[in-house]
Image 1 (cartoon, one colour):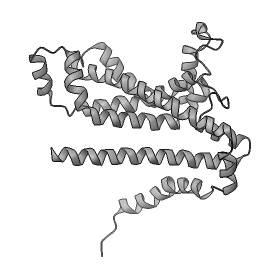
Image 2: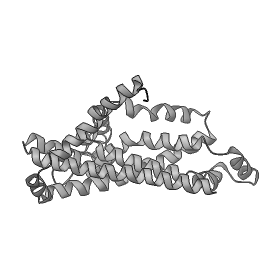
Image 3: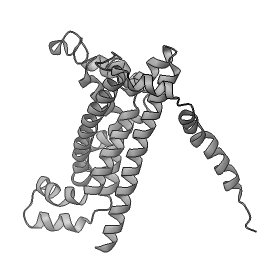
Image 4: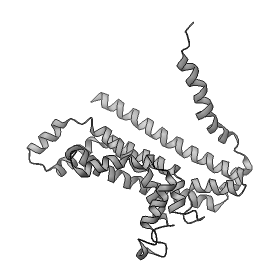
Length: 262
């Protein structure tokens, strides 16, 4: 009979109690009435639309900026710009997201961006996307950097020898190699954007039908005492998250299988 280790005794019950059980509690509390009321609520579908649109653009901006960081990571690692960017990449992770939302509000709100409108950029879908980007970008940057570590630098050296500038070598040699990392960075950023609440509500607001997203919709329904609707919306978020995780896993397995065939 196999001896059970201490790690197994600790990990298995704690993992299922603290990770699996809370998710199961949401799914187990979904009711038919809650589903009917939620899916018949046009504000819910507005929140879904707002969430998907803003997360799409937040992740896209995150990947573009992460590729810029990757360029400095490979070609200019000793510069001051790289050192500042490398340090600041981790900063949004450590920063409380209410503080991040307030920082964005002060930076892009009425005081500094008065010319953009009565509230600056604040309390618009653009503000929601920027808030999502702010908290999700570090995932994209670290994913790109981790993949860049595995690139054969001889390929870049050959491109440079043949006359390519660093920018051309990055575009023609590095970015194609980073294809899988770019996909992973986008999916991770998109998933993180879907889950953001504090920074979004501070900078983008929580206006039903306008800037409300799924996370703030759940919060609003809990405040209103509409627990059934909050549970249904939460289960919908869980489903979206599962789809993203499955997409990332299946894509990773497909890439690993095809890479092994090369």
